[in-house]
Length: 78
Image (cartoon, rainbow, N blue to C red; front, side, top):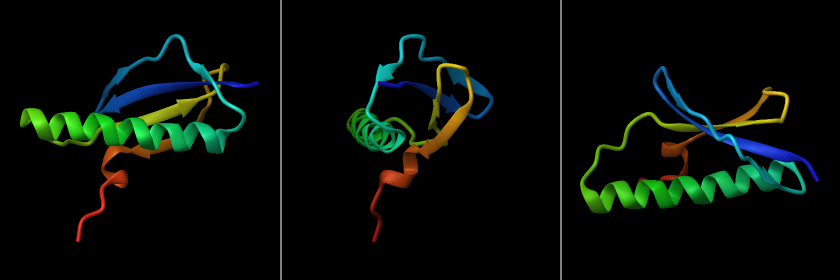
């Protein structure tokens, strides 16, 4: 089972995921990243923090970025 790393990027800063998580596929990893982004955004709203330009950069074990999930992409605004 492949291991995916969920690095959090905010502008030029990156918070590296050094452990990674195993998923059946990249699609499963992206789905999990979307759920995690919703949880992080919910916490920011509850604490009054600014929702900024953060995103998950999902990478493989060799460091290649396979997908980017901007946190704001999980919001449904009318």
